[in-house]
Image (cartoon, protein in one colour):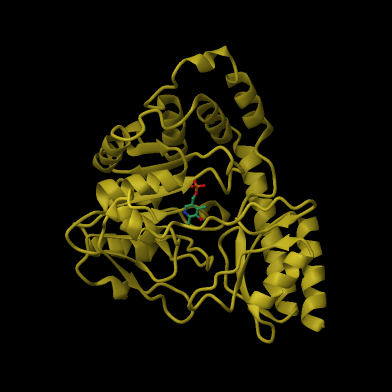
Length: 353
Ligand SMILES: *Cc1c(COP(=O)(O)O)cnc(C)c1O
């Protein structure tokens, strides 16, 4: 507390990122990072960009990267926005597109950053409970709103909402912007990006942090109607015009060019996930259907918070949310097969003890 803080700063409860512990030989399954490194082409591109040319500012419009992403998604360059992480892209969307005189709607359980942005940008919001099975009922969103946002597939549940439901939401809310946060879409979701030319009120955000193994590079992007993108550009150019540095631009572009590597990493993660789900079920866990690179699971007899602590003692870090409706569950990122074997081994001993 400081008397120098603004009223807004007094009112903030900042987002708590998953920890990055400095423990040796740790199996880190707590922040949904990709267990496989980025494409070797990304490393080469960043090494090449790491030159005396860094004395100059990067392209503030990030035109080459935008062109690459536009081509990848079959869109025009003016339908693409890029930012220094999808968290930043989302922040600009809250500031520029979701602050209205009616409440912003989002599920009670979804990415926990959304309420933080609402307080930061003084946006009125209403949380809509997911069903008991953690699925989203679009009929619960038939109320006056200044926008709707949720992650699809959702976090931390891993559950995907069918694209048909998103289409219905877009049709029912022609005067609201609907933001679909697709941080995990490459692990089994169906991207709403194919609806962009039909719905001027749709904004899709994605990140290179998870499926492209680049959490350390901080690159995210949004896809949408040119008017929505221009709104984001106006916020960005009033805040941080050179949002992406030269290394990030070079690395991100190379990541999109090496599609074969990307697809093979995603497929490996998905295959491991499917196996781990079956093995966890055999150990007595119920696991929500996951279309992501993590699973959300609870055990009938063992308390999640205790399992969390015991795993940690064995140098396995997962994520535990001490929050209503979530406190019975553990969120476990999908690591390599070897890491998951160790996890299953330790869990097996813990639940039979
Ligand atoms: C990881 C994550 C993000 C943030 O991704 P960054 O690009 O690393 O900031 C956004 N939304 C959801 C749902 C996420 O899980």
